[in-house]
Length: 142
Image (tube, rainbow, N blue to C red; front, side, top):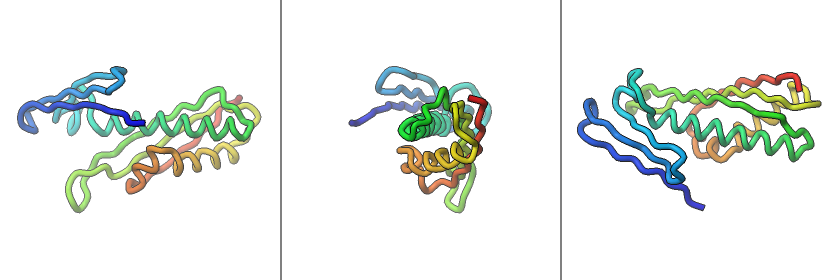
């Protein structure tokens, strides 16, 4: 399997602009210096990483739960990607995952164990292994 995305940048860093499009056609949007480093309109690479990570984590957690006989009603995850500076310049300096599951018949400790495993084992987490990650877990009444 191979997945693609295309991006185009026009102009210089501060006043330029760009577009990004997923190969599937499911998303196309604009990005700019302002949408990345300020609060401007549009998306940015870190937001795209967050979306990919939240989606991958939620799928991995739901799958692991179901395989263990705890089929979830839902798993909802927010990934907050932090852009900051390190010794080499700007970098993704951390990712905070916050997940909320509705899983009938499971306790919080068991859900947390599955969530920790998903944090460490989902495909996108493995790709981002160099980035510090935190996990907050909430279990709704199932």
